Structure formats: structure tokens, C-alpha cells
Length: 398
Ligand code: PMP
Image 1: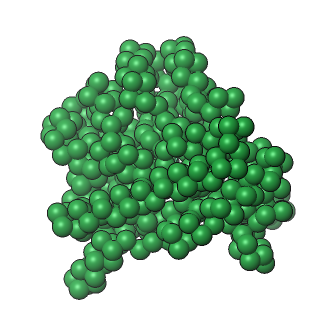
Image 2: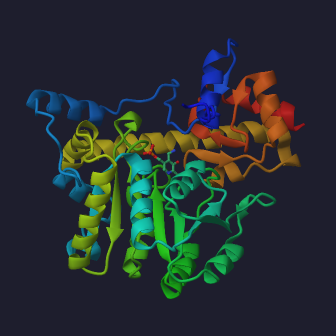
């Protein structure tokens, strides 16, 4: 009966992780998967989350079904975090927010909603983008295209070409934008560039869909959400997918949110209702535990201050590893090759310019694992391995 079902080729990044785990060499470094590791190479359990867990354990609340749209105070806290408590759109209650299964769940929910209510809309993604963006939007039945973004020759943005493409799109096209810490390149728009981009979105009647999977990993919680807030300020009716996988180190709990900024509170009520219908027909209602943990932290001034501090530490460590790798490579290459991009890119990822054959050599000869595109996850670096990685890179680039 299932003879026509082909084998799953596997997810390239997850398969690489398995290969890494099975690699018997002592000297090996994983710089592939997008997880934040601490200096000791472990996935951290944030202390604020541990305390929130202890509080929850004491309460022993039953696990009944949550409302379809998720926990009400959690949804409000998500809005406050994404848009800022004082934002006009928050205060006038014109944002519909639903608790989702991580950032991926938010993207899928938004994609399903778009397919239903804007069936002819086509989706424009940055070139390159996170692979799963294609799979999620195409999986919802939407056509996808890419707009110019990264310039491999200079390591910077093809901003003019990006703007030209967006200017040429039919009204009602969906444009997927990364709020900050672009995955996979690490290259973000500057504020001045956002200020040029946003009027084009508004004037052309495009539908912005902002993916914010790394809030707090770039410059700070408010700083990284600046683009989202600027879009809402400009009157853009915007979809925002946010994730707590990385900034709370709660990957497996699947916690996130989808917020849709609408023109007024009544419309937001209708949109919320139809998002509920979309959830209901997909998985009925979201899980309890992860959202309760995040809620405990965000609702407590003491725990949320502690969270901001722990997040600042993660962000600081990534910046420090960027500086250390840059220093180590500068020592080896001097003026012969410029690695300044390591310092200007933001977030966990860096497009290194290392080619696919060089990626293979790094893995085969040195046990240093990057993904095929040459994307490096900076948080796999530590004081203990950065010199080794710089040596390996020098050997394959020379
Ligand atoms: N968007 C981007 C750009 C990502 O990098 C990721 C995680 N790799 C996600 C969304 C999905 O996050 P989550 O794990 O919360 O589903």
C-alpha cells in the first residue's frame, strides 16, 4: 500500500548533527545547528526559567485544555514584549495575538491564514533565507519567490536591488522579513534602510510578515524589535512571528506567538477569531507548560529583569566569540584577507564565504562542522576551540 512513498532524505542540518555525534575524533567542533551553547558547549537552562519551573511545580495546576488561542495573560505579555507596553497598537487593542508552537508554528499559522483570506497572494523571501520558510509557505499552498538580499561578493546587502524588486511587486504580495539576526547570513538592514523600505511596503500595499526568532540576540530586546514597531507605527498591517526557543533556551517546549497588527480593534477581533478557527482545524489547542514558564518570567518584574540579564550574557558571549575568531583569523591572515564581516554581522549566524568544497575539507580533515552554504553558528565556538577553528580555517583557505 505504501510502496509509492519515497524515503525521507532527512533534514540536512539535523543529519549533520547526527554525523557530528558519531564522529569518533577527539578534536571536533560543531558549528552547524542553530542552537545557543554556553562556553562549556552546553545548552543552558536559564536560571529565571528554573525558578519559574519551581514556582509552577509548587502550584501543581492541572493540564486541562488551554483556550484555542492560548493563555490570555501570556498573549498579552507577548504583545508587550514584541511591540512595547506603551505602543499605540497595543493600547488600542488592534493586534490579534495567538500562542503558537514556536516560531515555526507561528509562520505556518500565518501562512494558512494568508492562503485562506488572500488566496492569490504570493510570498517573497530573501535570497537566501532559512530553508524552512520555503517549506512552510509552499506547504500552505502559496507560491514563493525570492528578492535580492545578500551580496556574496561584498558580504553586504543588495539593498537597492531589494528595494527595486519590492517596488515592482503587485499590491497584496507578502514580503517575509527578518526582524534582526538574519538567518543564515547574519546581515541585517540598518535603521536607515528600514526607513527607506517601510514607505515602499506601505505605498505599494504589500503585506509584511516579520519573522523574529532571535529577539534579544542582536542588540537588545527593544532594539531588535525596532523594525516591527516601526512598521506598526507606519500603519502597515503586519504579521509577526516570534519565538522563545532561543532567547529562553526552550527549544523543545515549542513556545512562540503570532501577532497580526490590524487597522482597529474590531478587525483584530475578527482576525483573532479566524486564527482560532485555523488552529482548531490544525491541532485544536496549544500545549501548556512552555507558555506557563514564559508567562511566569515575563509577569514577574524580578524574573524578567533576571531574564534580560541572562539574555545579555548570551548576546555578549556571541559578540565575544565573533571578536575572538576575528582576532585569531587576523593574526593568521593579516591584511591578506578581511574578516571584518564577523564583527558587523549580528546574531548567532555568520555567512563566512567558505565554499562548499572547503566546508567538506573542514569537516573531513579537521572535524569542524559547518553547513554546506558556509554558514557558521557562532555559539558553537568557545575559548577552548576558537584557536583550533581558526587554524583549520586558515589551512583550508590558504
Ligand atoms: N525563523 C528562523 C529565521 C529561525 O532561524 C528559526 C529557528 N531555527 C525559526 C524561525 C523557528 O523557530 P522555532 O524553533 O521556535 O520553531
